[in-house]
Length: 423
Image (cartoon, rainbow, N blue to C red; front, side):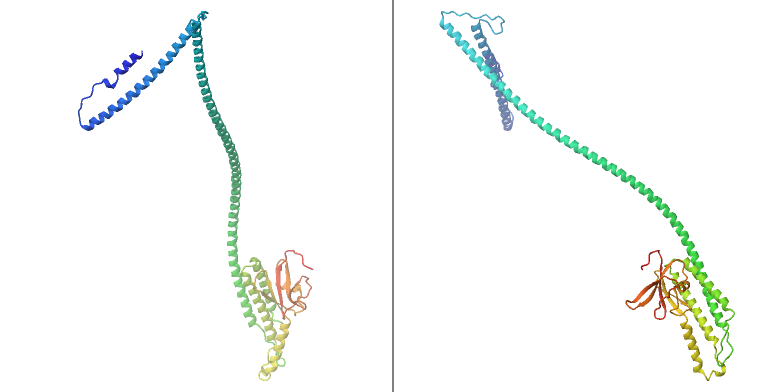
């Protein structure tokens, strides 16, 4: 069998193939030689592999045949036969017995070697299985760690989801709150728009009223100018008496003038009530009222002074004597009147009025009547204290005497808000 294989291999050997004719250039020949060497090496490697496989197969078949012959010698039958007939040895032939025993020993040794090889294979398989087991356990541990990590990530993801849901709920609540506030702001904006329209209408009405009041104020100023001109023209000259004349009765128009002055005061009061407390027109009204008071004082002084005229017969002889009664009358007239300078609200400009009473006789009731302000006010007056010097003294009894300062009364009016007065 081996000889036939050798014949087959020798038949395909490259040594028996004919040599290729030499043709072409030197490079082609060199390349052809290299290709031939490579193909020869490949064939030799393949031939050696096939020989090794064939030898291994023949060795295994030989071993099987030797085992079968040993079994045949020992048992008298082949291993594949079912009948197991024991081999009877001749007791008188020790060589035969020795051969059989040796054969059995060789067979046992062969079986022992086979069993050892099987044991080694089993151990190797066990080692491989142990390695696979350890690898599987390592992989299992890795997978368990991965699963644990995935569970942790899942837990974190669920916690993040819960947190996001809570944030969404909070944002939803904030959105609803913002919508509610926006609705309220929209409602308030509508209300403020309506109030703005109302304020615009009131402002227009106030401007119209202010223009009307301005016209009325101009009319009142014209009336005051006419009254002043008329009073200066209608002051009567009395009869002569020792160089002086005295008008015992006032002019017939005095009562009418008093009524007109009262009407002017009422008109000023209505004008003052129509303006705000800090309106610039308040200063104009204060100036107008002060002018009216000064005009009344001047008219009264003119009536007093002009009632006592000088005699034309003594005009040149008694100049010094004629001037004395006038000065005396002026001093007595001025001393019978008291000027009141008062500040109202937060206006820095004071107002001035005159009361026909001497300083030290003016009461709080007289001041209230002269100021003529609607509402409740607290009255503070500038006074001199022997211990503290200049102070502001509050007077709240109508019958109390108002303190003076340097020949006049200085007062401050503050709106009464119901606060308790200190004792």
